[in-house]
Structures are given as C-alpha cells and as structure tokens.
Image (cartoon, rainbow, N blue to C red; front, side):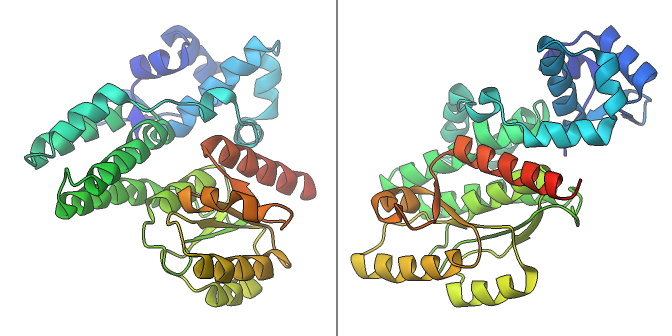
Length: 305
C-alpha cells in the first residue's frame, strides 16, 4: 500500500497542506505514520477519505458535522458510495505507450522502474484502473497480433500479479464484511481481472474468498455451501463454443438458485443475450462492478445496524 507525503496528498485531493494539518490535529480523522526522517506519511485510505470529505463539503456538509461521525463511519459511507469520477478513470495512455516501448526489446530495469514510479504517486485503486489493467489488456492484444513474445506477456502478467498481491496482503481480513467468493470457472486461466476484482472488493470491506483459475463449478458450489456467500463473482474472459456455453449456463443457473451470482469479462459480455431473465447479473464494466459492490456493502451495513 502506498505512502504519500503531505505535498502529494494536497495535489491528489485539492486540499491545502494547512487544511490537511488542521483536520488531522483538530478532528483526528487521520493519523499518519512517520518516516525515518519524521515526515508525515499518509496511506491510500487516508487520501481517499480526504477526497470523500471534500466531496461532502462541496455538497453542503460542514467538517464539524462530518468529524462527529468518526473515521470508521465515514469510511463505511465512502466505500458504500460509488462516484462517476471513480468509475470513469481513463487509461494513462502516454505512460502505457512508454511502458510498451520497454518490452521490445525487453528492458526489464527501465520497465519496472517506470512502472513502480508511476504507481507510487497515486492511490493504488487508481493505479489498478489507469495503469495495471490497461497494461495487461494492451500486452494481451499485442501478443494476439504476434507483436510480442508469449514469454514477455507472461513476464508482464507476473509483474502485475506481484503488485496486486503485495497490496492485498496488507488489507484487513474484514471478518464481518459481506462474504464474496471470486473465481475463474473451468477453462478460464486468465486471472488478472479476477485478482483486481478481489482487491477492489477487499478494499471496500468485503470478506473475500479468492479461488483462482480453472475451478469446476461443482467444487465452487461445495465451498459455497460452507461459507454462505453474499455474492459470487466469476470472471469469464474466453469466448466459448455453443456446447461449452450451454454447460456453463447450466452451472451458473444452479448456483444462482441458491446465491447471488454475477459475471464479468469479455466472455461474459459475449453471453449477454443468454443471461437475460436468468437471475445472473452481468457486470460489463468497472462502473457496474463499483455499483454492485457499493450496493452489497450498503445492504450488509443496514442489516447489522
């Protein structure tokens, strides 16, 4: 998880450094850590909270009213909200072009230095949406076009996976959050999208079970009988034959009779007409995913308050 000094937080949030210091001192909504040389260091969550506070002030609330709610309540409201700005972050095209140029021929040192530097100065969720997922898509397209070697595609995939897992390992377990099971069904081996969804769900307070690629739906059902998920999210990236599609739909319908099931990815979008009136949700972009997670978290909070 990234750490940000106060000047960077000011740029990311639009709040002055003086305002940030006053809110920190007077209302104790954030408690930054200190670096070895005693500089304040704010987390990605702190940055997101500052942004949320500014949005609420713009809507007419006062900082005093917001502070009375307390940090935990504000974070819950923040996670339950899903703003268009969060949903519509565009890929960082110029950076992606530069990163792609480091792959042929492969310049590992410069590629990783540039990628690391770009990720370090923005909240990680923004990095996922603007850099990591678009980078994976671009490299996948280049491989399909025969413009990069499969070994290079595998290398980039592993670098992205390392970034995702490094941050996910720092997230709380969210033991009392809504339970979400995430997996890629049989024949689905591309798991970057599912891993990114795992991060997004966990960062919003969900208790996530990530089961990886190529999972038979019968085994998924067995696990769900034990953990009783509030939502099953499945990543479908491959376009399937008619026979494979029929088999998959049968399995999805069986799951949806007992639990809420949602699917996403290019393979899911290709099945859109087949999913109508099945009770299986199609999340066809990140905006739809944000909205579904926000609804899930909000419903769960109301049920326990």
